[in-house]
Length: 207
Image 1 (spheres, rainbow, N blue to C red):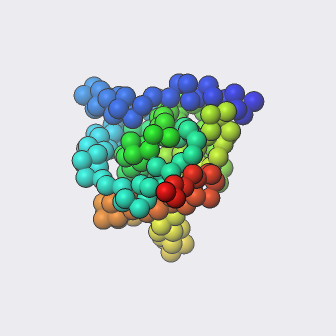
Image 2: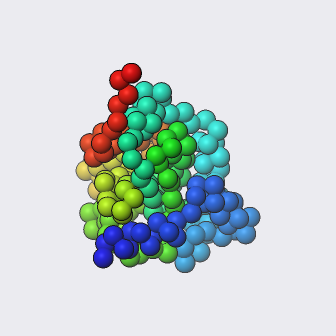
Image 3: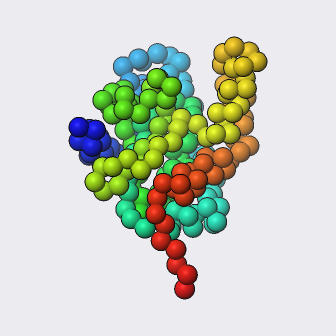
């Protein structure tokens, strides 16, 4: 049953290029993804479109890390559950796209969380539908690993702030976006290198 849901979800997934086009269309129409068409989410969608354009131009996957993804032995699908208003998602998905562009073995697919509750509920984080959520599967729909909604480094910042202040507020959200900009995706790439090395068989070229 789980494999069937995953395969159906992948079939509905769109490419990164199509996702960017979708967001740009929503920005032009002053809309956002999902049923909740609030001004806040519409404004976040506009901001995230700008963030993604900047990251598409500036992100670089280090050569040493890139080699790990190039060494993947078998084809796999990386599908990401996301929404256009999600700030963490906007900071993450351009990096996933850069990795997929670098590796012929990786097929990146994007799914909107609220349109795919059946698959989202298979991959909850502490009982919540936290996004972005990356699920890595093989050609048979078997789950190899998952990642998200944030890098371990960003998660540590969130947990430390919650411990000291009780909850996440607007001040921390702004701080986290500044941290993302300074980190330049390095923490996410480091996490994904570990994910690949931990769960997948790599074919090393010793020639």
